[in-house]
Image 1 (cartoon, one colour):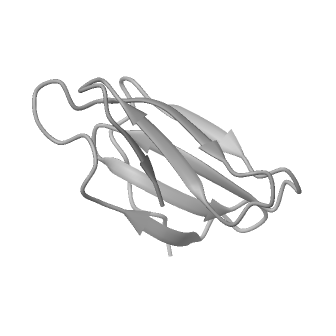
Image 2 (cartoon, helix red, strand yellow; image 1 turned 90 degrees about the vertical axis):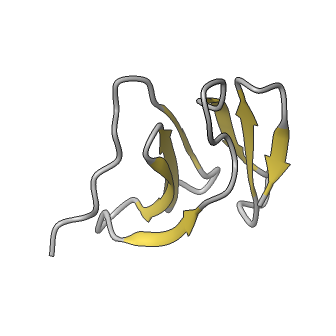
Length: 79
């Protein structure tokens, strides 16, 4: 089953410290995926919607349990 598509004209990505997961963010959304299978582990919605809402950065916490996103609308969110 193919993974859902995220619009990638401008995208950000980050790997968890252990390399097991990665997060990818684009205009179409934010997805956390398994590094080995590419399967979507979580879809994060509700940050950076609207004209100035593109995601400008993503990062995992040191222990990999949380994702942080920063947006062009000058907000940050911890998931």
